[in-house]
Length: 211
Length: 179
Image (cartoon, rainbow over all chains, first blue to last red):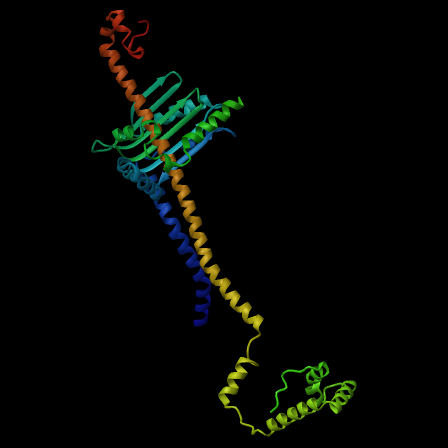
């Protein structure tokens, strides 16, 4: 009886140790995702990724949990206010997609997303149509008058791109506008290394050159 | 005892090299004849041979003293029982290699994870900048549009009544279409 116990223990213990190691490694990431998905300000925009054709531009950003905390810390060392802003943010989610072939479908999807948001308690802060740019900004008001989420959709006809961006958490709009002026947060150039903006620009240029 | 260090005769030098083999009976027969022929005519070499035989005889007379047991065991331990040198070297090399691997693999894994984490953080910062920048630009655009709208509603009509000289100073975006 005793030997049977030890035999089974010998087989089960490595599996148990492996399971424990895997769960320890994975649990913080899962916890981050759970927090994000549970937050009322989070909006999943991954359906917009379906607009991308085979060689279209497609960038998906999904930051939450410990990685976002690390970003806040790294950015905070350079710009203190950025750390204040990011420390209250639960997730940053964005989809940048080329809509050369699917402009009409993209417009329809943006409209549907707008309807879905306004039907879910989001306020449409503004909708601006200027020349070839269409901007929609939605905010989710919190009970205490603050903002729990911000969703922005920008489509540019000349660039054939659609940007869906969602920030979930307590958001200070003034701070966003102040910090993110022109996306070049001062002092972050060397931290950001290769910039996502330049990557997108390069893709667009390559696309135009191909045409 | 005579000093046999320096020899002028090459035959004598050669003989003394092989003399020990001759007295031990290990020299071939032809060599033995040559040595005996030289000894019969060289008194110095004869004397050298006699000295050699005397030393040998004296050594044989020395009493036999048995080695203490621990010395025997120690000597046997270092000779007969000793592992072959190659095996020992391989053993110590494998231990060294294991030690190096034990240190290097975690270090490399740590370095790799550091590099990966750093790259991931850099990418995350870049993505954060991009999303915040896009959002900020959208907010500015909305703000600008709102200000424009308010301006149009409240100040559009009075502005349009301004003289052409003043109207030129009003930004195009604030004018009503056709003005």
